[in-house]
Image 1 (cartoon, rainbow, N blue to C red):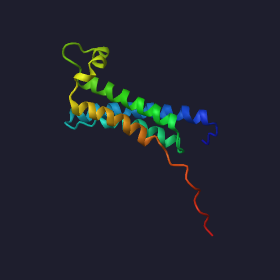
Image 2: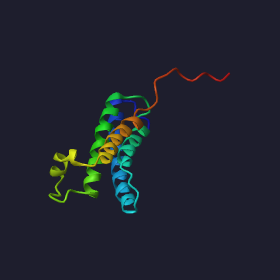
Image 3: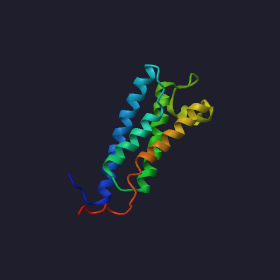
Image 4: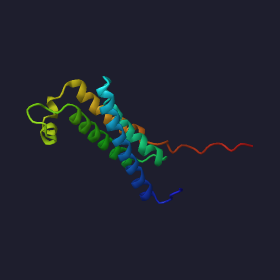
Length: 131
């Protein structure tokens, strides 16, 4: 399917980013139960899902994917290890500063990976023609 409308492409890219984030969330939970802490995975798959659809560079998509990467990372961490005092998501979000420094770093890197992998290719010069 070759879609020409940029808005439709952006919506498709965000939908694929959402799908990538869901896959990343479930893979993260599964891997964490196996003993491997891969909190970057939800954010990275958000960016990869979006980048596969929208090949050209789009700053709005990068921002959307960074926010989605942070959101999926936060949600995934909450599902894996909620606070003992109150296991609600709202309590978790309001107490994000109480997380371990490594967890906060991984959440920030999840957002960065979301933006980085969604950036697409640079609009550089077209490829040279083969004679």
